[in-house]
Image (tube, rainbow, N blue to C red):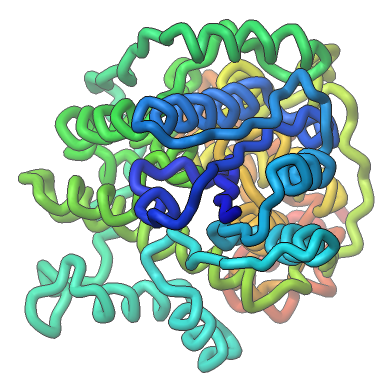
Length: 479
């Protein structure tokens, strides 16, 4: 009997296995032990389980046979798959390749132990075929994101005018990344969803089974089906894309989402496809600067991180600055935060515990910045992001956290550490009452201390030459 395993992160409306008439049954595994392995935010668990149950229900409504290992079975993924293979006498198992190491190898090993043939489909979460992204990285020993992005644009024809980029510019950073205007700006809210019976049941079950995990299922706020996700995307394009580019790096203490699309939770589990997102964003009258800034994140940054993960597995273990501070319990629990935790960190951490989300500049320049300034062990930082964020998976977080955010690779992914004092944060978010308060903050003190502590390692980095010179001048003035 031929069966297909539908992985939790591959909830496509049109998974290629659905069109294979030779596949007789479809397997779904809800592994409670997997979710208990690290304390995943409850919203992440709700998203994955509800999405799977909606997919299973849709297949059953179409007359297909679905077999499911439920949360209540309390089986590991391995035990669940073994049970399904044995009980249903599977002779061949089809599944879509998973981008995270070593999922495919583990599934194949289980099949081999049970004399089950395998059929592995190409990964559908990305625009770039595996062999093409692997080939590009093989040809670029020092792979720069901007080079990769240009290659993507040329390869796909997206935002191209013949052989030249639309608007005759590859990016529009000069027009983008501004702070919110002091007079204020209207920020359209995210769509409000009415949860159906399936999602309500999942929320109740997750809240009951994962009491010690961050968040609460009652606050769950995300789409769980392809149709809901497409509507969510359409609302972003209609209401927020116009201002996305201009304010993509802005922050505001009482606005967790601003003009961001917040589609990564759905995109990273197949509820949306890259092709859908590109079509929606490029067939609009939105300013080219905003469209390009958004497209760069989708076909540039996201796919570059996936390629970096595939090409450089060593990134999982790097620690160039030899940082070793352990993550304290409050990062996971949200309880008993230190009184001296800087306002930006406290605010963003509180919203992460509520939503399982913070937008990219808050991740990088508030949370990641503080983790690095305080000397947290990079692998612990990576584990925390994986647990707390609804859109976090190894393929995207390892290169993003270990490389770009925590500089653990010494400058391979990002050419300089993304650190700052209070001045930058104040400029982009007005976190303190005044610029003087930002300058005198513990964030600023930590920034100068970081530069002094790692001066020997950072001295050769030309992008930090001015900052290091300022640090030495401050040090000399103190005698």
